Amino acid sequence: MEGCEGVLDRFDWVYVECSFMELYAGQAFADAVIAWLRERGLRLAGVYHMAYDGDGRAVQADFLFAHRTDGAG
Image (cartoon, rainbow, N blue to C red; front, side, top):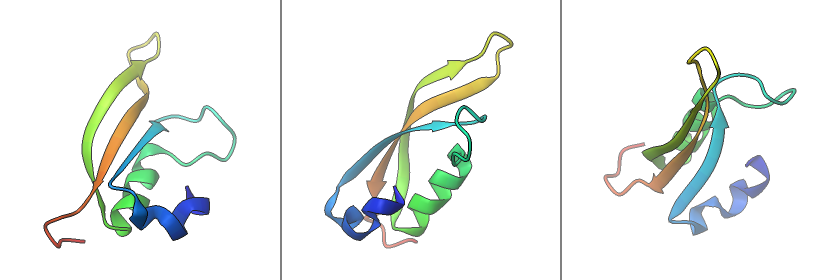
């Protein structure tokens, strides 16, 4: 996502799959992605398709972000 930072303001919506546990070496976790997008003026608008492992732990989900319209950062 850092590669698209220069054009991020052109998008009304961002839909991204995020993980809560390491699935790939060096990946950003959901909390870091949420914070990164929030710092750039997007708010979390929804969470979809939550996946769990065999022990019931959350593994990953799809997150929908929208540009803030309330002026809050």
